[in-house]
Image (cartoon, rainbow, N blue to C red; front, side):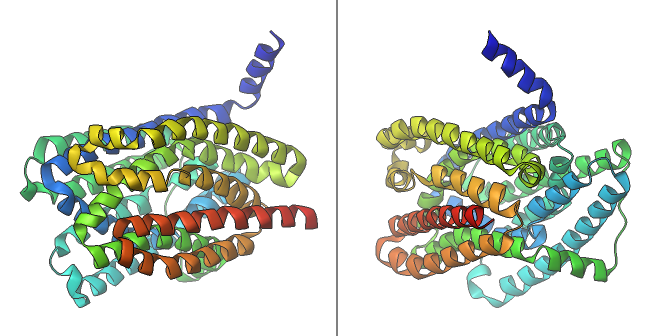
Length: 423
């Protein structure tokens, strides 16, 4: 009875946190289920080679996405949460960040045009890269960081569920043969763009957040202030997507299709912890600077619970990986099982890396250390990925990812302990 009363009291005291958690949980369920529904269908309809092409295009375009986002999902969330209750300051931060993101997106698009038209490899399917770039536009316009900062994540869920579900259904309706493969990036991009437009209208007319372009001097200041977080994010995305690009260049689109069909399953499992880390980030950005001991106790508790849940999920997943991929992709997908077995610990390492790096180091203002760890991990991956991929194809790519993620966890733990002792 006492525990129940304590639980009810916790819910009342942390009402926003709980609502954000369940909102983000619903969104992650959607983000996990939709790919698990669409990917098997696409592999059966268009085959591993064209599926690999689409995955390669997403990996390529993700570089421009990280440029346009510039780490604002972290720095913007932190700034908005700090100015809680100050409408003028929040509106100013919104204008500065949105202006910066628009400028960066234009630069990214021009850069992509230059790459597509100068490197022969991209000529054959140039239209796929342009259609996929719509995801970058959608992510640029979507003020995820603002909603996260004001801790009203339920609206993100509403907007995403409506648009992404609609355009996912369109894939099933219109993609019937291999020649329809170009519709997949089109509908995917439209899903992102439509949800972004809806969210902007909501901020304008329900929150009275007005957009006004800021001068380039303001953009330069934003970019300077967030450079270390941005560079850290570049390393993460570069490392994740660089491996797919290397695999595509070395082994071809079929190998990319086999690798990404397994990697996307693992990403779906990783998404299970995304609601937790996203909903608690603004909470810990305040708490860790006001009551560090209390924040660390809560983070340790989240780490224990999350790791236990992941172990319970991943052990049977490892044992029955072959049966799972056959059920999902058919007998042709059996080659993906070995990739799942190699990457099986990745959800746990990424979960703990986020708690150590983002929730502790970034919130303590140790962005330089966070960047240093990601720089070292990038160099390790850079050294490992090409030779491993060259000799072992998608298996080598998977091993490179595993080595790098284990290093990140080890380094994050070492530096976090060091920072806490020194401070």
